[in-house]
Structure formats: structure tokens, C-alpha cells
Amino acid sequence: MPRSVQVEEASRPRQAWSFRGSISFVVVAAFFLLLLVAPLPMGANREWAWAPMTVAVAAIAIVAALGLGPRRGLPIAVGEGWPIAILTACFALMIGLAVLQMSTLAPLTASASFYAKAAEVLRHARAPVPSLAVDASFYALLRCLACGLIFCIARTFCRNEAPARFLLMVLLASAFLVMIYGFLGLSNHSCFLGSYLKKQGSYSPEFDRCIMSGTFVNSNSFGCFVGMAAIAAIALALRGRRTAARAAQELGEGRHILDRVTGWRLSLLALALFFAGGLLFSGSRAAFAATVASFVLLAVLLLRGRLHSRRQLGSFLVGVGIVGGLFILLAGGALIQKTSSSSSGAHVDRGVIWQTTLQAIGESPWLGWGLGSFPDIYAVHQPTQIPLANDKAHSTPLETVLELGIPGGAVAMATVLLPWAMALRSAWRRRRRRYLTAAAFAVSAVPIFHSTVDFSLQMPAIAFFVSALLGMGWAQAFVPTDGSSTSLRSSHDNLLYSHH
Image 1 (cartoon, helix red, strand yellow):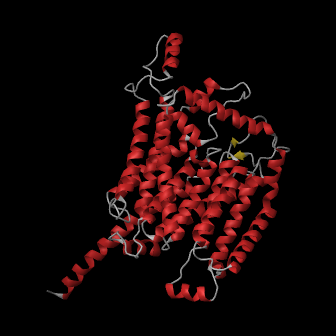
Image 2: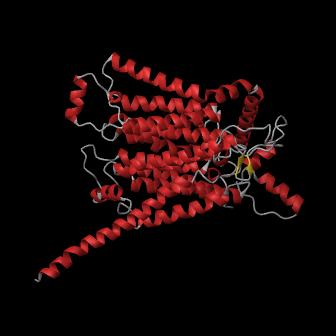
Image 3: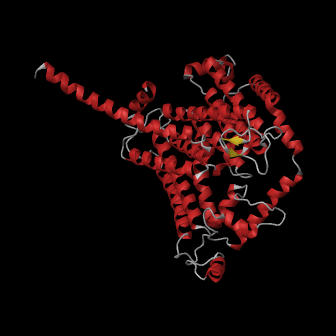
């Protein structure tokens, strides 16, 4: 065979491989770009923002399922069969129940009386269904489907270390952009997000100032988001790269991970301090408490088995105390001012909302009032102590149970808690890539904890990142401990993220 023919045939696989690698890069870049910009349009909590994002997520999921992403389709790893089957069943049950609530096939619930009253007044009404607002249920269902697709995409893309680590860096970049806008807002009409006024009632730019909230419409969600970024930065800073021989040498010398200070680690810790300052500027007490609790969990997971003496433990505690003191001095005034100036009425209002939510749950405990129907049922049960309208229960678990019923709420919460528990189990039991599963668990813990007394998980931007992190943690939890990969294209994935 002529030499020119041999060279041509040898070059064909390489050209095809490069073409596939370029397609994979475009698909992965689109996914990470979507996550990067999601917090910018008001936390993506407006239909004009999250609806196009949902379409983009669906398109990326279809392309990834066709095998044009870093991995071919959605292969099941060793030991993943039963967990993924249970998770899929829970998600399918939740979606099926939400669809049933919009259907006349569902049995009559407490909402039937409202449809009957509407028929008396309007002399025409549609057949009664459990959902009080079918259009709101449809929109909420789309958000749930988008989060499920993001989980699947992240599980597919983040089986290897490079893209999983890159996901954490995308979170840092997104939070950095949000923080820049927040600091600009502090010096120039911080109550505005574009032309949107983030304040009820009148506003005077000369006298009124709003607490720092970045591109989010409220300071609590902003504090939750930058708290997530702070935990992610710390997890990347504590990432270990030691060989077994190096670890044995450091153990003999009484050293540990905090003794290996590099410029990269210092930069990440400085970034964590930057985000922590934003958290304190937000004045969100619940976000602060959730971030502190998540940091403790992250430290326990990453330092498990690495602190072998009292000196090491003492140096770690001193370091934590110094860093904590620095950022409290930097911006703790906003948090202290909000705590001292807040009246007990705010706490009473939230307690009244929770009591009203529990009352509504008791009236329709099995099928709920319909996904996304909280504003409508709250308007019916609105207490006289709170004259203003309210569209959130300020507790995502309570609101979920109200909308889906007790069984449906339990299934919906299982779709979040099961991947979260898998990440915790992997971070606790494994050493290889522990920082990734620990980060997936601890970073997601911030909005999960915070949402018990607020609604940060209902902000699409935060929900999108949490879904991606849980998908990454799920994928990393089933990576073989011996270092081998279940993917036939692991080397290609590493090249994809190293060269592009």
C-alpha cells in the first residue's frame, strides 16, 4: 500500500476524534454557561428568564442522551442500579402526582368546593381538579423537570474529576459576578435591580438604602448563594494531591493539609473570605447559620483521618478562628444591625404563615392543593394579622407538602435527600476524590438547611446549581475506588477539559 494512502487512513480517526471532541466541548460549554448566567437575571425567578433556560436545558439533555457529550448516553455504573432505580421511581411518582392534580381523573378534594362557588358566581366553571391554579402547576412542573434534567446532565458530564472540579469553579465565577453587582449596588441605589425596585412602599434614594442582595430580588437568597460559593472555594482549597508515599512522609513529620500553603490555595481562601463578606453584608441570619453548619460538615468530612495529634487539631481551630474573626470584622455590622433592629413581629409573621400552611395541609392532606398553588390557597386562608399578599410559605418542605400532599411531599423531598445522602456516604467512606463528594454535600447543604425557614431552593438559579452539584456528587459516588473508570472515554474527557 502506498505510504500516502497509509497516512490518509491513519489521519481519519484522528480527524473524527477531533470533530467529536469539538462537539463535546460545545455541549459541555453550553451547560456550564447556562449555570454561570442563571443567577444574573434576578436569580432567574421570572418566567422570561427561566422559561428559555428550561428550553436550553432540554436541548442539552437531548444532545447528551444522543452521545454527543463527554460520555456516551447514560450508562449505569457498578453498584448504581438500585439507587438510580429508586431515585427515578421517586421522581416519576412526583411528576405523575403533579400531572394527576391537573387532571379530572383525580378524586375530588377540598378544592371542589371552590370550583362549585366559582360556578355559582360565574355560572360556568371547568370540572373540579385538586389544583387551584392549573397554569401555576404547569409552570412549577416545568421547573421540576428542568432540575431533573440538570441532575441527569451533571451525572453524565461529571463522572471524571476535571469537569466535576470545573463545576465548582463555575459556581465561584457566577457568585463573583453576583458579588460585583452587589458591591456596585451598595454605592448606587442598592434597592434597584435594573429598573426593578426591591422594596415595598415608597423609596427615596437620598435616605433609603437596601441590604446587599446582588442580582437576586431579596437579600436572603443572595446570602444563601454566596454562602454556597464560600463553601465551594474552601473545598477546592482543601483539595489534596498527595501520593501514598507523600502522605506517609507528612504523617511522620506531624504535618497535615493546612501546612501545605500554596498561592492557589491562598487565592481560593481569599475568594472564600470575599464571599463570606457578601454573606454578612446581606444580613441574612438563616443563610449565615446554614453556611456555618455546612462549613463544619465540610471540615469534618475533609479532615476525617487527617488530624492525628492535638497540635494539628489546635492549629486548625486557631486558623478557623482567625478567618472567622476577619470576615466578622469586615462586614459583621450588617448582620448584627439586622439582628438587633428586627422586631419580634417579623418572627411572629413567619410563625403565622407556618400555622396557616399547616391549617391548609390539614384540609387536603393526601392530594394537596396542586403544585404551585400556595399563593392561591394562602389568599383564601390569609390571616388578619398579615394584610400583605404572600406567595411563599418561607419553608420549602411545608410548602411542598401543602401543594403535593403528605405522600407526594415525602416523595418530592426524597428526590433531593437521596442524592444528598449518597454524596455524604461517599465522602465519609472514601478517600479518592473525597473533596468532590464532600463539596457536593456541603455546598448543597447551605440551601437545603436555609430552605427549611425560607425559600432559596425555590429560586431557579440556586435550584439549578443544587441539581448540578447533586448530579456531580452522585456520579462521583460511583467512581471505582481503584482509580479505574467505567467510562470508555475518560482519557478523552480529561483532554477535553485540559486543552479547551
